Image (cartoon, rainbow, N blue to C red; front, side, top):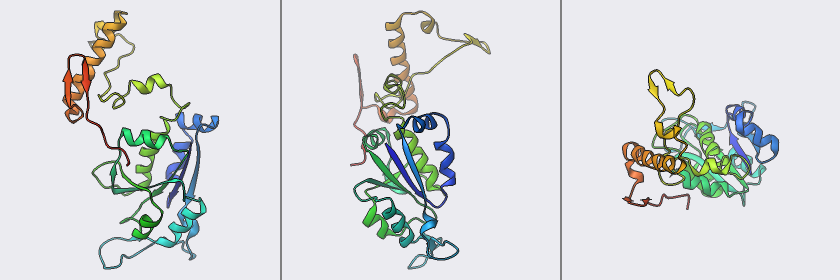
Length: 237
């Protein structure tokens, strides 16, 4: 998979691709990326990429011309092209899984009051929001999406680890413990030391339900004696 990210501040993004699991995935060739500086497509010596909005109002708007040229330079047509925006569709695990099936994702990072609407109308397939709040940086939002997506690509992370994560089965993940066995007077639950794998799985399921009821009851539609069922979560369609 390839991530192509268009930004006014690509230096914010670079460190992520140079670090940890992502760096290993890039080194193996499982993940590829390209960072495009939109300012390289500005017309004037100051590399201006924003202007005052028509109709008045506070803030500035990203200009259509340099953004369009940047998108055309990466041949975004025919590729999944995403715009990070607080006005977008709310991002979730299902949306991440859908994007993980793409061969290449082009991400446009917004700034200021956003981008000229004609860019969205002409070039963008999907607007994505990572939450009901506003950031000053579309780059940080883009990193959230990239991090959620790339780890689902085959060969990046052990598939068994993904199966037990929060949201993958509809519930939040159960609590984890490691050495030492006693920390500040708190002991690891005896069941985890028992070696009884069936009972451990049962305990983990019960703890997942308990945590979900407490922190995210909206994820539960109804419980059954044999397990649980959850409401379908919207993706990007």
